[in-house]
Length: 274
Figure 1 (spheres, rainbow, N blue to C red):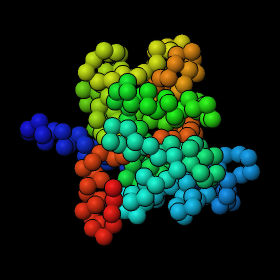
Figure 2: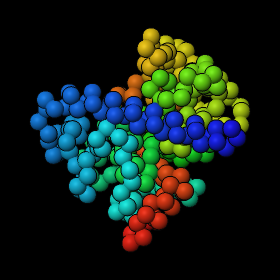
Figure 3: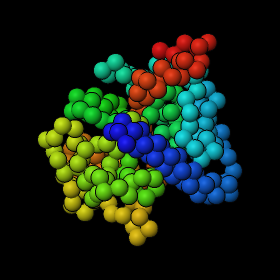
């Protein structure tokens, strides 16, 4: 089997695992949410409620029947017109707290629904691959008007929930088992600070240990399998921390890889997607 075939196989198993993982997560969440009465408006002065929609009529917390949401051409076409949009290195970004819609400014997503909201717009959660990109995001988080303390990234632990992650190359998991779900690119060893790939993991956390410090449970699933960008929560500046995927946070969306957006254009020739 060639190296190319191996790479393609890895991509396939990772995608399949993420889809199945999201399906299981959504089933669990749906079981809890079915007992709640849907609300189309954010709660007064509080966090946007489940069932709310934005002004485009799309769910703030989309489930997509337990699958990873696919891009919608009409939403992709206007993503750069949303209040809260900015560009860096020819990439589009959207900052939820800068929206002019209360339902989005007040929204707090879990990792799964956050990715889905972004993906409908030809975007995904951020994959931070350089100090310059980190500084760009920090500029928005530390705006005098907002002072945002934490946002999701697309970082994901390659644990039992993702098929194919039992391979030796991903072990030990807290060193070699992290990847960017948005691009399916491996993040590099978490204990290498000056390697080829950018490393923004914190040197400390709630237990005083370098991040990521979560462990695999007895069933093989990570107890902190997703990563967020936290600002000086532990006197450590702006840094990555592994956390539970069901925690709820604000989000930054970033354009999907250009090849993915080009595919959406080809499939929707009647829609102009910038």
